[in-house]
View (tube, rainbow, N blue to C red):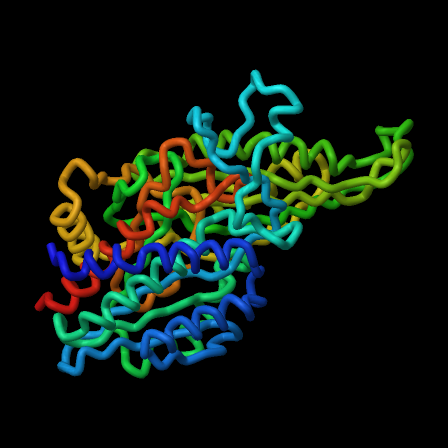
Length: 417
């Protein structure tokens, strides 16, 4: 354990908490993080770094050079917010569940709750996933590693990425813009806060940390007509309903503890009149898998099933798949390093093996397709509302924990043979 690093982090923790809350109060959506990117770059410049701006639009990077030859390690944080109307409130003195009204509260008591002082100032936008906290954490890491750069060899590349939420494709845009080059990065690490676990608890897992995300679009073509004469029609709604009902069945058939699948139809659109059977029904949904092989099995099963059901109804079906993000698959050596470092810093009892991949997806997967690395988690609090909830807020208490772990992970990687 490096007490000098920890001292620096704690010394500046209040400042980076203020940065986090400034970003929280002024959320910007993907591809439009102009003010956030400026704040990021300004902070880095004040530290003495020379950030590179406008990467893939609003991305920012900076390089911490120890002055001694060695490997290059990258650390990444996201900057974008979500299109959600924030409903966060200060915690009460009697430890009510965080940000949630109790069932026994009156309307008057609920209305008296105080909004967070740094609550979003823009209606319909909020940092509901903790990217404000991740960005502030990486600032703390930058400050600490820059001040202690004589304690390691090689270089640390800081990556502040836009638009992780928007299309889950801006990591790819950052890569295409050369963020892993000049100098060439050898490995990359990142973390995400994890509601539902003790604040500061480190969770990590070998292989898939998060699921991949594939969208499915099914267009069923039948034969429309008067609703009073079904014998003359081929109803695409009936075929679509039958197809939708098979998704949970296929989900159960394919899933295993080591290779889970989540498949859901989330859209069903057809018809414009109550007395007309439509010609077409359109279904759309999501497929989440922890491996590419499982993704292909799911796609094949859906295709065969949808075609068969449509044919049985006398209709036809067009099935399309859009692979947005592959599974986020950690590499073995880098994952083991995170486990070892976390246990050394915080003790065995504060580090857990994450048993299953998260069902959410992350475009960090694109970095891991190019170079080794690890994506891990830090608990945001047992009572923390879930990410993407209007009641969510990043827990500032975990910022120093995550910063210390990222600092040591970077230094331990650079020290490894």
